[in-house]
Amino acid sequence: MKAETLRGFFERRVSASVLAGEAEETMHDVRVEADDVLTHDLSTDFVVTGENLEALCDAVIRGDLQAWHLEVIASVLVRSERFMWDPSTAAGALVSRVIYAWEAPEINYVLSAGTVKKFVLLLRTGENTFDASDWSEVPPACKSQEA
Image (cartoon, rainbow, N blue to C red):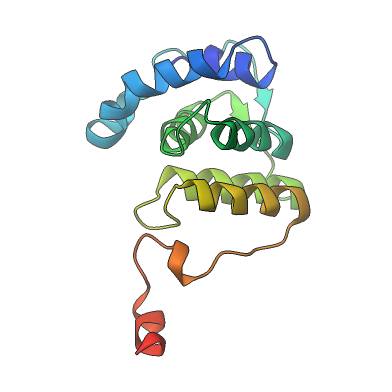
């Protein structure tokens, strides 16, 4: 996936369908060779905001992107040296939390229509409505409480 395509989506210059196409082409690389996810980095820095992530969620909710595309997109954001966010601020910490949750759904929340709606709520209000049913793997402590 090209970082410029993702930046273009954030800047409303690139459609969700173009972004989805690149995510489809890149998914194998995410699962097998994570270092090869980012084909071309940006030439300048771009600050990622909660609104940018909300736009991705909205595209999933509309059906323009698949929920699993967020894993590919998050991998590009993490591996880029030009996509930035400041985890020392409340807004930046929230952006970081969501990106890293998307990047590793196998140890965080599953990426589904339901969890994407919860990510939108988290990004817009800061309210965490996730529960054990949203985790990819229920932690052992929760398993003992379910019994």
